Length: 119
Image 1 (spheres, rainbow, N blue to C red):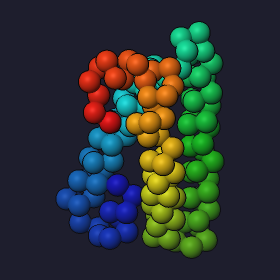
Image 2: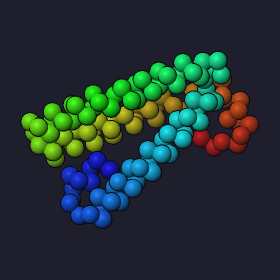
Image 3: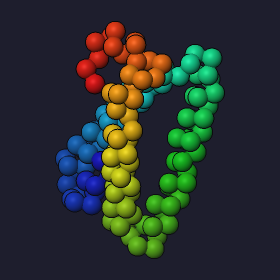
């Protein structure tokens, strides 16, 4: 979604990038919430949700300000490239941290095994 405007100004590519980015965001939100409900103790769910929202929504204005400064001083293309690299850089640590073994070892592991989940 972020790299598409760097590569082209074609409206179909931009539309496809926006669609895939929106779909990815929705899939992430559903899966993250499902994992939270499986892994967080019910009595801690309110606190967990508050902290998760603080960090996720609180990071948005910080990121917007940082990308805005990058765009102001180095141009929009550079800002989008930095943003795309930052987003991609979060994937490997996530995949190394959230593994089937880790999920099975925490509270929701029994529920995951019973549900027939394959990951």
